[in-house]
Length: 454
Image 1 (tube, rainbow, N blue to C red):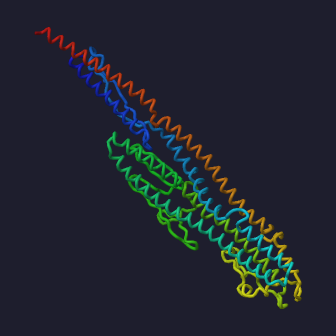
Image 2 (cartoon, rainbow, N blue to C red; image 1 turned 120 degrees about the horizontal axis):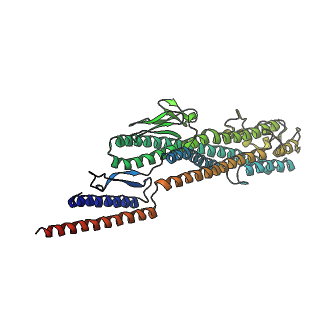
Image 3 (cartoon, rainbow, N blue to C red; image 1 turned 180 degrees about the vertical axis):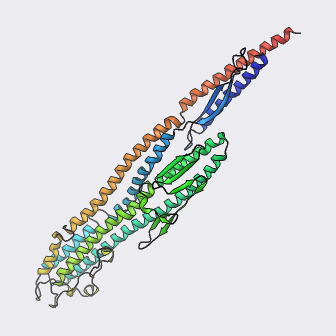
Protein backbone atom coordinates (compact mmCIF):
# COMPACT_ATOMS: atom_id res chain seq x y z
CA UNK A 1 0.00 0.00 0.00
CA UNK A 2 1.31 3.48 -0.85
CA UNK A 3 1.97 6.08 1.79
CA UNK A 4 -0.98 8.08 0.48
CA UNK A 5 -3.12 4.95 0.82
CA UNK A 6 -1.90 4.57 4.38
CA UNK A 7 -2.99 8.12 5.09
CA UNK A 8 -6.49 7.26 3.89
CA UNK A 9 -6.52 4.08 5.98
CA UNK A 10 -5.43 5.99 9.08
CA UNK A 11 -7.98 8.75 8.48
CA UNK A 12 -10.70 6.11 8.28
CA UNK A 13 -9.40 4.56 11.51
CA UNK A 14 -9.65 7.94 13.21
CA UNK A 15 -13.28 8.19 12.11
CA UNK A 16 -13.96 4.70 13.43
CA UNK A 17 -12.47 5.48 16.86
CA UNK A 18 -14.42 8.73 16.94
CA UNK A 19 -17.56 6.74 16.14
CA UNK A 20 -16.78 4.40 19.02
CA UNK A 21 -16.43 7.37 21.36
CA UNK A 22 -19.76 8.66 20.04
CA UNK A 23 -21.45 5.35 20.95
CA UNK A 24 -19.89 5.41 24.43
CA UNK A 25 -20.98 9.01 24.94
CA UNK A 26 -24.54 8.16 23.92
CA UNK A 27 -24.60 5.25 26.38
CA UNK A 28 -23.38 7.46 29.21
CA UNK A 29 -25.89 10.17 28.30
CA UNK A 30 -28.72 7.62 28.61
CA UNK A 31 -27.51 5.83 31.73
CA UNK A 32 -30.70 6.90 33.56
CA UNK A 33 -33.10 6.71 30.60
CA UNK A 34 -35.87 4.14 31.28
CA UNK A 35 -35.87 1.35 28.73
CA UNK A 36 -32.60 2.39 27.09
CA UNK A 37 -30.49 -0.55 25.91
CA UNK A 38 -26.72 -0.33 25.78
CA UNK A 39 -25.33 0.20 22.28
CA UNK A 40 -22.22 -1.52 20.96
CA UNK A 41 -20.29 -0.55 17.82
CA UNK A 42 -19.34 -3.53 15.68
CA UNK A 43 -15.99 -3.03 13.97
CA UNK A 44 -14.43 -5.08 11.20
CA UNK A 45 -11.05 -5.23 9.49
CA UNK A 46 -11.01 -4.12 5.86
CA UNK A 47 -9.32 -6.91 3.86
CA UNK A 48 -6.17 -6.11 1.84
CA UNK A 49 -6.50 -5.31 -1.84
CA UNK A 50 -3.43 -7.35 -2.85
CA UNK A 51 -0.71 -9.51 -1.36
CA UNK A 52 1.58 -6.55 -0.87
CA UNK A 53 -0.91 -4.89 1.55
CA UNK A 54 -1.30 -5.79 5.24
CA UNK A 55 -4.87 -4.56 5.08
CA UNK A 56 -6.86 -1.39 4.56
CA UNK A 57 -7.60 -0.63 8.17
CA UNK A 58 -10.92 -0.80 10.01
CA UNK A 59 -14.52 0.05 9.29
CA UNK A 60 -17.78 0.30 11.21
CA UNK A 61 -20.02 -2.65 10.48
CA UNK A 62 -22.89 -1.18 12.44
CA UNK A 63 -24.23 -0.49 15.89
CA UNK A 64 -26.51 -2.84 17.79
CA UNK A 65 -28.40 -3.00 21.06
CA UNK A 66 -27.27 -5.49 23.67
CA UNK A 67 -30.68 -7.06 24.11
CA UNK A 68 -31.44 -10.58 25.33
CA UNK A 69 -34.82 -11.72 24.05
CA UNK A 70 -34.98 -14.54 26.60
CA UNK A 71 -34.83 -12.11 29.52
CA UNK A 72 -37.39 -9.84 27.84
CA UNK A 73 -39.76 -12.75 27.43
CA UNK A 74 -39.26 -13.91 31.01
CA UNK A 75 -40.07 -10.40 32.15
CA UNK A 76 -43.22 -10.33 30.02
CA UNK A 77 -44.25 -13.65 31.61
CA UNK A 78 -43.56 -12.73 35.26
CA UNK A 79 -44.83 -9.14 35.35
CA UNK A 80 -48.52 -10.12 34.96
CA UNK A 81 -48.31 -12.39 38.01
CA UNK A 82 -46.66 -9.71 40.13
CA UNK A 83 -49.10 -7.03 39.03
CA UNK A 84 -52.06 -9.34 39.60
CA UNK A 85 -51.17 -9.71 43.27
CA UNK A 86 -50.46 -5.99 43.58
CA UNK A 87 -53.90 -5.13 42.20
CA UNK A 88 -55.61 -7.74 44.41
CA UNK A 89 -53.80 -6.45 47.48
CA UNK A 90 -54.80 -2.85 46.77
CA UNK A 91 -58.43 -3.70 46.04
CA UNK A 92 -58.84 -5.94 49.09
CA UNK A 93 -57.17 -3.27 51.18
CA UNK A 94 -60.26 -1.15 50.53
CA UNK A 95 -62.43 -3.95 51.88
CA UNK A 96 -60.17 -4.33 54.91
CA UNK A 97 -60.47 -0.63 55.68
CA UNK A 98 -64.25 -0.87 55.26
CA UNK A 99 -64.48 -3.42 58.08
CA UNK A 100 -63.15 -0.92 60.59
CA UNK A 101 -61.13 -1.54 63.74
CA UNK A 102 -61.87 -4.54 66.00
CA UNK A 103 -64.17 -3.51 68.85
CA UNK A 104 -65.37 -0.43 66.98
CA UNK A 105 -67.34 -1.93 64.13
CA UNK A 106 -70.28 -4.31 63.72
CA UNK A 107 -68.90 -6.46 66.54
CA UNK A 108 -69.37 -3.57 68.99
CA UNK A 109 -72.93 -2.97 67.78
CA UNK A 110 -73.70 -6.67 68.17
CA UNK A 111 -72.43 -6.62 71.75
CA UNK A 112 -74.43 -3.48 72.58
CA UNK A 113 -77.56 -4.98 70.98
CA UNK A 114 -77.49 -8.15 73.06
CA UNK A 115 -76.47 -6.19 76.18
CA UNK A 116 -79.59 -4.07 75.74
CA UNK A 117 -81.78 -7.20 75.82
CA UNK A 118 -79.89 -8.37 78.92
CA UNK A 119 -80.66 -5.03 80.62
CA UNK A 120 -84.29 -5.37 79.54
CA UNK A 121 -84.42 -8.84 81.11
CA UNK A 122 -83.36 -7.21 84.40
CA UNK A 123 -86.09 -4.56 84.12
CA UNK A 124 -88.72 -5.77 81.62
CA UNK A 125 -91.16 -2.92 82.35
CA UNK A 126 -88.57 -0.11 82.29
CA UNK A 127 -89.28 2.47 79.54
CA UNK A 128 -85.60 3.40 79.50
CA UNK A 129 -84.50 -0.21 78.97
CA UNK A 130 -87.09 -0.65 76.23
CA UNK A 131 -85.99 2.55 74.46
CA UNK A 132 -82.40 1.38 74.72
CA UNK A 133 -83.29 -1.88 72.96
CA UNK A 134 -84.86 0.06 70.10
CA UNK A 135 -81.89 2.41 69.89
CA UNK A 136 -79.35 -0.43 69.80
CA UNK A 137 -81.46 -2.35 67.29
CA UNK A 138 -81.52 0.68 64.98
CA UNK A 139 -77.77 1.18 65.45
CA UNK A 140 -77.12 -2.45 64.57
CA UNK A 141 -79.24 -2.18 61.41
CA UNK A 142 -77.39 1.01 60.42
CA UNK A 143 -74.06 -0.69 61.08
CA UNK A 144 -74.97 -3.50 58.69
CA UNK A 145 -76.29 -0.98 56.14
CA UNK A 146 -73.09 1.06 56.33
CA UNK A 147 -70.84 -1.99 56.13
CA UNK A 148 -72.68 -3.31 53.07
CA UNK A 149 -72.46 0.13 51.48
CA UNK A 150 -68.70 0.39 52.09
CA UNK A 151 -68.04 -3.06 50.65
CA UNK A 152 -70.16 -2.18 47.62
CA UNK A 153 -68.23 1.07 47.24
CA UNK A 154 -64.97 -0.90 47.38
CA UNK A 155 -66.23 -3.06 44.52
CA UNK A 156 -67.34 0.03 42.60
CA UNK A 157 -63.94 1.67 43.07
CA UNK A 158 -62.33 -1.50 41.77
CA UNK A 159 -64.66 -1.45 38.78
CA UNK A 160 -63.53 2.11 38.01
CA UNK A 161 -59.95 0.84 37.97
CA UNK A 162 -60.97 -1.94 35.61
CA UNK A 163 -62.24 0.67 33.15
CA UNK A 164 -59.00 2.64 33.54
CA UNK A 165 -56.95 -0.47 32.77
CA UNK A 166 -58.95 -1.10 29.61
CA UNK A 167 -58.22 2.46 28.46
CA UNK A 168 -54.51 2.00 29.21
CA UNK A 169 -54.47 -1.27 27.29
CA UNK A 170 -55.99 0.39 24.24
CA UNK A 171 -53.53 3.29 24.40
CA UNK A 172 -50.59 0.88 24.63
CA UNK A 173 -51.74 -1.41 21.82
CA UNK A 174 -52.29 1.62 19.56
CA UNK A 175 -48.79 2.84 20.43
CA UNK A 176 -47.24 -0.57 19.74
CA UNK A 177 -49.02 -0.76 16.39
CA UNK A 178 -47.64 2.66 15.48
CA UNK A 179 -44.14 1.62 16.55
CA UNK A 180 -44.43 -1.54 14.45
CA UNK A 181 -45.08 0.63 11.40
CA UNK A 182 -42.12 2.88 12.17
CA UNK A 183 -39.73 0.00 12.91
CA UNK A 184 -40.59 -1.83 9.69
CA UNK A 185 -39.76 1.22 7.58
CA UNK A 186 -36.95 2.85 9.60
CA UNK A 187 -33.24 2.51 8.83
CA UNK A 188 -31.28 0.27 11.17
CA UNK A 189 -29.67 3.07 13.19
CA UNK A 190 -33.04 4.67 13.93
CA UNK A 191 -34.89 1.44 14.68
CA UNK A 192 -32.79 0.87 17.82
CA UNK A 193 -34.48 3.75 19.62
CA UNK A 194 -37.89 2.69 18.34
CA UNK A 195 -37.24 -0.82 19.51
CA UNK A 196 -36.46 0.43 23.02
CA UNK A 197 -39.80 2.24 23.07
CA UNK A 198 -41.54 -0.85 21.75
CA UNK A 199 -40.14 -3.12 24.47
CA UNK A 200 -41.12 -0.65 27.19
CA UNK A 201 -44.65 -0.45 25.79
CA UNK A 202 -44.93 -4.25 25.63
CA UNK A 203 -43.60 -4.47 29.19
CA UNK A 204 -46.24 -2.01 30.41
CA UNK A 205 -48.96 -3.88 28.51
CA UNK A 206 -47.89 -7.25 29.91
CA UNK A 207 -48.10 -5.86 33.42
CA UNK A 208 -51.73 -4.90 32.89
CA UNK A 209 -52.83 -7.93 30.90
CA UNK A 210 -51.11 -11.28 30.49
CA UNK A 211 -50.02 -11.55 26.88
CA UNK A 212 -48.40 -13.75 24.26
CA UNK A 213 -45.66 -11.84 22.44
CA UNK A 214 -44.18 -12.97 19.12
CA UNK A 215 -41.21 -11.03 17.72
CA UNK A 216 -40.84 -11.14 13.94
CA UNK A 217 -37.66 -10.95 11.90
CA UNK A 218 -38.23 -7.31 10.94
CA UNK A 219 -38.35 -6.25 14.60
CA UNK A 220 -42.13 -5.88 14.80
CA UNK A 221 -44.20 -7.81 17.32
CA UNK A 222 -47.52 -9.57 17.33
CA UNK A 223 -49.40 -9.62 20.62
CA UNK A 224 -52.39 -11.62 21.81
CA UNK A 225 -54.05 -12.26 25.15
CA UNK A 226 -53.28 -15.47 27.02
CA UNK A 227 -56.40 -16.97 25.46
CA UNK A 228 -55.32 -15.97 21.95
CA UNK A 229 -57.40 -12.85 21.36
CA UNK A 230 -55.42 -10.56 19.02
CA UNK A 231 -54.28 -7.22 20.40
CA UNK A 232 -51.63 -6.10 17.91
CA UNK A 233 -50.88 -7.51 14.45
CA UNK A 234 -48.49 -5.41 12.41
CA UNK A 235 -49.73 -1.83 12.42
CA UNK A 236 -53.25 -2.86 13.42
CA UNK A 237 -54.35 -2.73 17.06
CA UNK A 238 -57.56 -4.30 18.34
CA UNK A 239 -59.19 -2.30 21.12
CA UNK A 240 -60.93 -3.84 24.11
CA UNK A 241 -64.15 -2.33 25.39
CA UNK A 242 -65.57 -2.01 28.89
CA UNK A 243 -69.32 -2.61 28.69
CA UNK A 244 -71.59 -2.03 31.68
CA UNK A 245 -73.99 -4.85 32.41
CA UNK A 246 -76.74 -5.79 34.86
CA UNK A 247 -77.40 -6.08 37.70
CA UNK A 248 -74.49 -4.17 39.25
CA UNK A 249 -73.53 -2.05 36.25
CA UNK A 250 -69.97 -3.32 36.49
CA UNK A 251 -67.91 -3.45 33.33
CA UNK A 252 -67.33 -6.63 31.39
CA UNK A 253 -64.28 -6.69 29.14
CA UNK A 254 -65.10 -7.41 25.52
CA UNK A 255 -62.93 -8.08 22.47
CA UNK A 256 -64.69 -7.78 19.14
CA UNK A 257 -68.06 -7.94 20.87
CA UNK A 258 -67.18 -11.13 22.76
CA UNK A 259 -67.10 -11.09 26.56
CA UNK A 260 -63.59 -12.21 27.60
CA UNK A 261 -63.80 -11.23 31.27
CA UNK A 262 -63.59 -14.84 32.41
CA UNK A 263 -60.49 -15.38 30.25
CA UNK A 264 -58.47 -12.69 32.04
CA UNK A 265 -56.71 -14.45 34.90
CA UNK A 266 -53.53 -12.45 35.51
CA UNK A 267 -52.03 -9.02 35.10
CA UNK A 268 -53.21 -5.92 36.95
CA UNK A 269 -56.58 -6.21 35.23
CA UNK A 270 -56.92 -9.86 36.24
CA UNK A 271 -56.24 -8.98 39.89
CA UNK A 272 -58.87 -6.25 39.83
CA UNK A 273 -61.45 -8.55 38.27
CA UNK A 274 -60.72 -11.25 40.84
CA UNK A 275 -61.23 -8.81 43.70
CA UNK A 276 -64.32 -7.20 42.17
CA UNK A 277 -66.13 -10.34 41.01
CA UNK A 278 -65.08 -12.96 43.56
CA UNK A 279 -63.40 -11.75 46.73
CA UNK A 280 -65.45 -8.68 47.66
CA UNK A 281 -68.81 -10.30 46.74
CA UNK A 282 -67.76 -13.22 48.96
CA UNK A 283 -67.26 -10.89 51.90
CA UNK A 284 -70.58 -9.21 51.22
CA UNK A 285 -72.25 -12.64 51.11
CA UNK A 286 -70.82 -13.46 54.57
CA UNK A 287 -72.11 -10.15 55.90
CA UNK A 288 -75.54 -10.85 54.40
CA UNK A 289 -75.64 -14.29 56.05
CA UNK A 290 -74.83 -12.71 59.41
CA UNK A 291 -77.50 -10.01 59.04
CA UNK A 292 -80.08 -12.50 57.75
CA UNK A 293 -79.38 -14.98 60.55
CA UNK A 294 -79.70 -12.37 63.28
CA UNK A 295 -82.86 -10.80 61.84
CA UNK A 296 -84.53 -14.16 61.30
CA UNK A 297 -83.75 -15.55 64.76
CA UNK A 298 -84.58 -12.32 66.60
CA UNK A 299 -87.88 -12.03 64.72
CA UNK A 300 -88.76 -15.68 65.40
CA UNK A 301 -88.16 -15.37 69.14
CA UNK A 302 -89.76 -11.94 69.41
CA UNK A 303 -92.92 -13.27 67.74
CA UNK A 304 -93.28 -15.89 70.51
CA UNK A 305 -93.37 -13.26 73.27
CA UNK A 306 -95.85 -10.75 74.64
CA UNK A 307 -95.62 -6.97 75.01
CA UNK A 308 -96.56 -4.80 78.00
CA UNK A 309 -100.24 -4.92 77.06
CA UNK A 310 -100.23 -8.71 76.84
CA UNK A 311 -100.51 -8.68 73.06
CA UNK A 312 -98.50 -11.17 71.02
CA UNK A 313 -95.19 -9.89 69.74
CA UNK A 314 -94.62 -9.21 66.08
CA UNK A 315 -91.50 -8.67 64.00
CA UNK A 316 -88.55 -6.84 65.55
CA UNK A 317 -86.77 -6.19 62.26
CA UNK A 318 -88.51 -5.86 58.93
CA UNK A 319 -88.59 -9.52 57.86
CA UNK A 320 -85.64 -10.19 55.54
CA UNK A 321 -86.31 -11.76 52.17
CA UNK A 322 -83.47 -13.52 50.40
CA UNK A 323 -80.09 -13.80 52.06
CA UNK A 324 -78.48 -11.74 49.27
CA UNK A 325 -78.83 -8.06 50.13
CA UNK A 326 -79.96 -8.71 53.71
CA UNK A 327 -77.28 -6.48 55.27
CA UNK A 328 -78.07 -3.51 53.04
CA UNK A 329 -81.84 -3.90 53.60
CA UNK A 330 -81.83 -4.56 57.36
CA UNK A 331 -84.08 -2.11 59.23
CA UNK A 332 -86.22 -1.96 62.34
CA UNK A 333 -89.95 -2.63 62.18
CA UNK A 334 -91.54 0.86 61.91
CA UNK A 335 -94.49 -0.04 64.18
CA UNK A 336 -92.11 -1.16 66.91
CA UNK A 337 -89.90 1.91 66.56
CA UNK A 338 -92.85 4.18 67.32
CA UNK A 339 -93.97 2.30 70.41
CA UNK A 340 -91.39 0.78 72.82
CA UNK A 341 -94.17 -0.93 74.78
CA UNK A 342 -94.60 -3.25 71.77
CA UNK A 343 -91.30 -4.98 72.56
CA UNK A 344 -92.21 -8.55 73.48
CA UNK A 345 -90.01 -9.25 76.50
CA UNK A 346 -92.38 -11.63 78.29
CA UNK A 347 -92.92 -15.32 77.67
CA UNK A 348 -96.43 -15.17 79.10
CA UNK A 349 -99.05 -12.43 78.78
CA UNK A 350 -98.20 -10.92 82.14
CA UNK A 351 -96.28 -7.71 82.93
CA UNK A 352 -92.89 -8.22 84.53
CA UNK A 353 -92.02 -11.53 82.83
CA UNK A 354 -88.59 -11.52 81.14
CA UNK A 355 -88.38 -14.95 79.53
CA UNK A 356 -88.18 -13.81 75.89
CA UNK A 357 -85.87 -10.88 76.68
CA UNK A 358 -83.49 -13.27 78.41
CA UNK A 359 -83.64 -15.71 75.48
CA UNK A 360 -82.97 -12.90 73.01
CA UNK A 361 -79.93 -11.81 75.05
CA UNK A 362 -78.67 -15.39 74.98
CA UNK A 363 -78.66 -15.38 71.15
CA UNK A 364 -75.17 -13.89 71.34
CA UNK A 365 -73.92 -17.38 72.22
CA UNK A 366 -76.26 -19.32 69.93
CA UNK A 367 -75.07 -20.89 66.66
CA UNK A 368 -77.52 -19.03 64.44
CA UNK A 369 -75.25 -18.19 61.45
CA UNK A 370 -74.27 -21.36 59.59
CA UNK A 371 -73.34 -23.13 62.82
CA UNK A 372 -71.55 -20.11 64.29
CA UNK A 373 -72.45 -17.53 66.87
CA UNK A 374 -72.86 -13.95 65.59
CA UNK A 375 -69.48 -12.97 67.04
CA UNK A 376 -67.80 -16.00 65.50
CA UNK A 377 -69.37 -15.25 62.12
CA UNK A 378 -68.13 -11.67 62.24
CA UNK A 379 -64.66 -12.77 63.34
CA UNK A 380 -64.55 -15.25 60.46
CA UNK A 381 -65.35 -12.46 58.00
CA UNK A 382 -62.63 -10.22 59.44
CA UNK A 383 -60.15 -13.11 59.40
CA UNK A 384 -60.94 -14.01 55.78
CA UNK A 385 -60.39 -10.43 54.61
CA UNK A 386 -57.17 -10.07 56.58
CA UNK A 387 -55.85 -13.45 55.44
CA UNK A 388 -56.61 -12.69 51.79
CA UNK A 389 -54.85 -9.31 51.98
CA UNK A 390 -51.84 -10.86 53.72
CA UNK A 391 -51.70 -13.68 51.19
CA UNK A 392 -51.83 -11.24 48.26
CA UNK A 393 -49.11 -9.05 49.77
CA UNK A 394 -46.87 -12.04 50.48
CA UNK A 395 -47.35 -13.40 46.97
CA UNK A 396 -46.71 -9.95 45.52
CA UNK A 397 -43.44 -9.68 47.48
CA UNK A 398 -42.35 -13.07 46.14
CA UNK A 399 -43.24 -12.20 42.56
CA UNK A 400 -41.67 -8.77 42.92
CA UNK A 401 -38.39 -10.37 43.92
CA UNK A 402 -38.54 -12.69 40.91
CA UNK A 403 -39.15 -9.72 38.60
CA UNK A 404 -36.31 -7.83 40.28
CA UNK A 405 -33.90 -10.71 39.71
CA UNK A 406 -34.90 -11.01 36.06
CA UNK A 407 -34.43 -7.27 35.60
CA UNK A 408 -30.98 -7.51 37.17
CA UNK A 409 -30.04 -10.32 34.80
CA UNK A 410 -31.36 -8.31 31.88
CA UNK A 411 -29.50 -5.20 33.04
CA UNK A 412 -26.27 -7.19 33.26
CA UNK A 413 -26.58 -7.62 29.50
CA UNK A 414 -28.56 -4.57 28.39
CA UNK A 415 -27.94 -1.98 31.07
CA UNK A 416 -25.34 0.76 30.87
CA UNK A 417 -22.45 0.26 33.30
CA UNK A 418 -20.52 3.46 33.96
CA UNK A 419 -17.36 1.46 34.76
CA UNK A 420 -17.59 -0.56 31.54
CA UNK A 421 -18.25 2.54 29.47
CA UNK A 422 -15.32 4.34 31.11
CA UNK A 423 -13.06 1.44 30.13
CA UNK A 424 -14.37 1.48 26.55
CA UNK A 425 -13.93 5.26 26.42
CA UNK A 426 -10.30 4.82 27.42
CA UNK A 427 -9.77 2.17 24.75
CA UNK A 428 -11.21 4.34 21.98
CA UNK A 429 -9.33 7.39 23.26
CA UNK A 430 -6.01 5.55 23.26
CA UNK A 431 -6.74 4.06 19.86
CA UNK A 432 -7.57 7.50 18.50
CA UNK A 433 -4.34 8.93 19.91
CA UNK A 434 -2.29 6.06 18.48
CA UNK A 435 -3.85 6.43 15.06
CA UNK A 436 -3.32 10.18 15.19
CA UNK A 437 0.33 9.58 16.02
CA UNK A 438 0.61 7.09 13.16
CA UNK A 439 -1.01 9.66 10.84
CA UNK A 440 1.66 12.17 11.92
CA UNK A 441 4.45 9.66 11.22
CA UNK A 442 3.16 8.97 7.71
CA UNK A 443 2.77 12.68 7.07
CA UNK A 444 6.35 13.34 8.23
CA UNK A 445 7.61 10.51 6.04
CA UNK A 446 5.87 12.00 3.03
CA UNK A 447 7.33 15.39 3.82
CA UNK A 448 10.82 13.83 3.95
CA UNK A 449 10.31 12.10 0.61
CA UNK A 450 9.01 15.27 -1.02
CA UNK A 451 11.99 17.28 0.26
CA UNK A 452 14.43 14.74 -1.26
CA UNK A 453 12.92 15.32 -4.73
CA UNK A 454 13.61 19.06 -4.68
